[in-house]
Image (cartoon, rainbow, N blue to C red; front, side, top):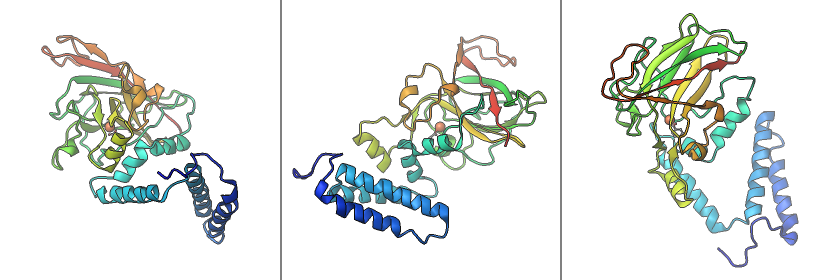
Length: 300
Ligand code: BEZ
Ligand code: FE
């Protein structure tokens, strides 16, 4: 860092005209962009990018480091790993995009990040079925209803559910041939659903790449608050991709991707071993939990 460089936020009056002139020239260069939305996006991006560079008085060395970092993010991205999305996630950009596109309306279920572990075509389970598929973890009975914002039950709504096991891993992280702790099911004629899953536990976002290095250098944890992913889809209603978070989880206020919304935090009631289960399943030797999550969908 050069000793001569003024601190962030410092205006450098004699430089202002030349810096303003450059910003304006770049803004003007998009004048003939045919697509008005693209023109708006590019001009706003340039305005904010130039303002950032000027605000922090970016050094050439820092600019080079930024380019090297983005290059490493690109090199880490493969068919199976999206380091750019992860970067967007840990910067809160994914969550802010969701906020902008999914306004909080009435009591409609709020959306949160999809994450990298959703897989199309997960197996169907019947109502009351078990999605664990052998994945290790404490059993969890999840039930609720799907209604529209007027309170009408939604029969036949599709729920896709996926979660990490108690070792903090999704099935796909073991290899391409494993399917566990993920399934889909449909609500009954009264819009009711129930299934056995696993009590969610905390786990880290992938942190063995450049984004993980950034988290480490900035003293941030890669851990996500414990959660179970739910995607709810029904004809004529807006799809919501959301989570159920665990009340009392110490990570609720420091989720690595800023995905927590208060309305999604639910009580997972722990039941001692031997407690009768809602469907007569025998669990004599282990505790289990139960949670209620009612889903409210907006009209499309
Ligand atoms: C997840 O919930 O699985 C996740 C979300 C964002 C980044 C990484 C993982
Ligand atoms: Fe997740």
